Length: 93
Image (cartoon, rainbow, N blue to C red; front, top):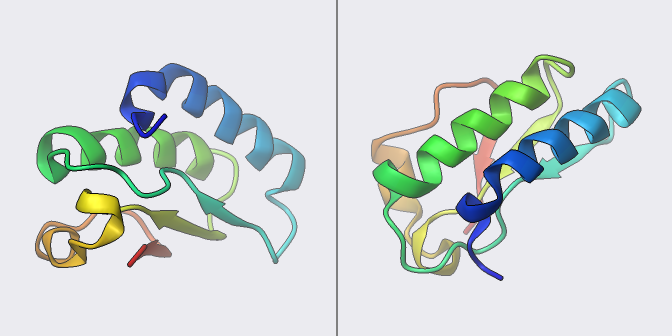
């Protein structure tokens, strides 16, 4: 399902577990929300991303995290205008 925000608790647990297991490897890339549908960046995707990223960064401070953008990752300008506050984050396009 394309409703990652509906599974935030599970996502935080999953990505923290993955970061614990593999975060010391330099070739790990986390994609935390693949192609979100037509949902709000500021009210849905960004808060979800920041919550999940917080869990990853508590274990892995530097590997790349890819964040999807609204409309199946077509509206990257919305994220560019209001970016996630974390290091080494890229936006899917």
